[in-house]
Image (cartoon, rainbow, N blue to C red; front, side):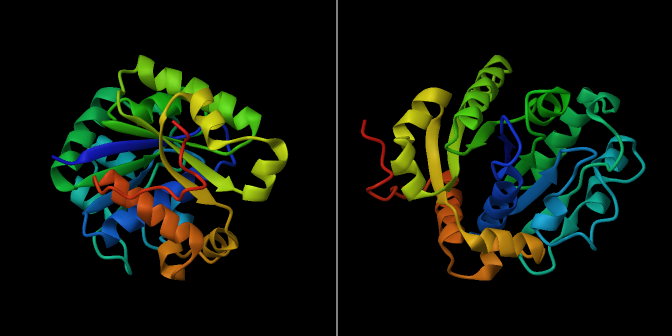
Length: 251
């Protein structure tokens, strides 16, 4: 059975959707059959991040309604073997989606894929709860600013209340010089949010360019952020990939 991972954030602008696309692509590159699923109904952008805007024509609501089967709704990536995409509906809100039908869909997905990464709406509203209700693991994406950390702490609490036990943290868009200037450390972020660290991704202009060109980050080659996302994907599969010495938590 595969593993369902919801990727969440307390606020917009943390790079959550970019993280879903990058990690999913890296897992597929590692030989894992991977589905990236957009659960941000109405505000879907995951198709842009992974370069599939012109490919996917159906969404998961078509499966829930019985209009088509899961195999028909899933679109294989044209350039990354083993990576598939399932879009969110463009108009249906989370209140219009049956949670029981969603749970049944996720069971089908577990049977088909090694990993499913779900792009959750930011915040802790109904869309977040719909995305997280079937998760085996959660990843909180945060940046180093105080509001992002505080909101990430609230997401952690909600995930715990929902029964998600395996919760990990990605600190994204890190600028080492800025961190030193505001005297924020990775330890501070871990302590505030409460989740164990999965990885750190530094600010990298390649992320901006890949998004605007609708190209998966790993296809940009040997870039800093791409390698850091690859290390995160490797850790998800159980590989022991150490953090760099400057990022390693003190304890």
